[in-house]
Length: 283
Image (tube, rainbow, N blue to C red; front, top):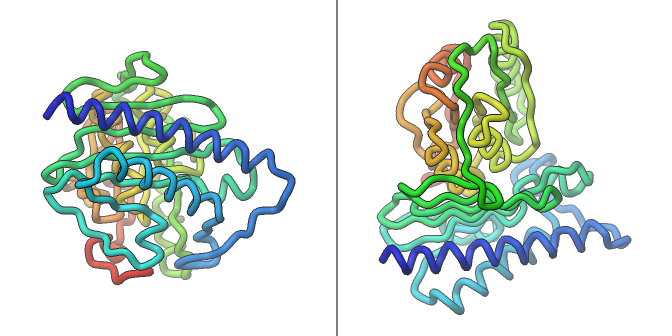
């Protein structure tokens, strides 16, 4: 099976690169993108998101017809979000759609691959940077073929933390977001950053550029590939309540070291969005 999964990963890299070309061409196109919304007015989707996902899924079905899929836009259109033991491709065609709409220069194609509910490989392509992040379970993480290694920093006061805030804007949720932000900033940390895409934030942790990333409100397709890239670069993953990471929980802390992750967890005002595996279709 190892060779088969390598073939699948090679295909994922090729598909992600092709998807990146589509994204870059769309950004060069003078015609204005039609921007639609999903769960809220800040949860955006464009024709390019939909086009890219269809291209990836079609290419995979031709080569691996028995495999299953979880795709962001497919789920939004009503497909069930079901992670089984079957080989499953977990796809975010454009992670950073808001960035894409505003031409903010961090946009990723994220493709994770799970067997027996365990990530076997992850591919994140930062389209405008032309950086291809890859990881195979037990075989390390790489960017454009060069090995990745998380930061060795163990003092959170000497750290940069990446954070994003989801797409929920009700007052109660926003208050909790700002409580966490104030606590983390006041530790103090060297700074708080955010690329606007979970996948790239996780790759920044894997690259040693930031010590940790946290978010509540993401989805499994945002973090499936990135989670393996972080782990294979020597990092750790936790839930925001300090327990083991659960990719369906919509909560994540990715860090270079457990000491950093556990210290960060103490400052996060955690809450529980509807789990990905419990949400009704179209949510």
